[in-house]
Amino acid sequence: MSALFHGDEAGFVRAQGPIPQTHGYSGQRVHAQPPAEGFGEVIMPGETERRLEAARRRTGLPYHAKEVAALQKEAANAGLPALPVSNAPLG
Image 1 (spheres, rainbow, N blue to C red):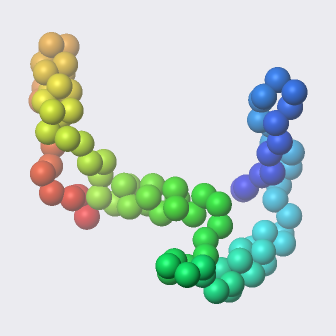
Image 2 (image 1 turned 120 degrees about the vertical axis):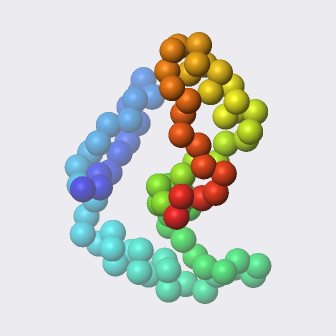
């Protein structure tokens, strides 16, 4: 369940309760708006991140070859077997 958050004087973020049921309606209203020139759609805050997370869960995390080599070296130094790596998306 989603929740509303607010920051206190110390900068901590605390949940303030569930998001009202109007959130879905608000999202529909936002998505129904025409996009600004040069954009394909109107999105809500966090949508880009949720889409990227879903894509990464389907296809895996992209790493540069140097990062993979460093991770493999550290695994070997720790006595662990080589980490499974794919050169193609998992999906």
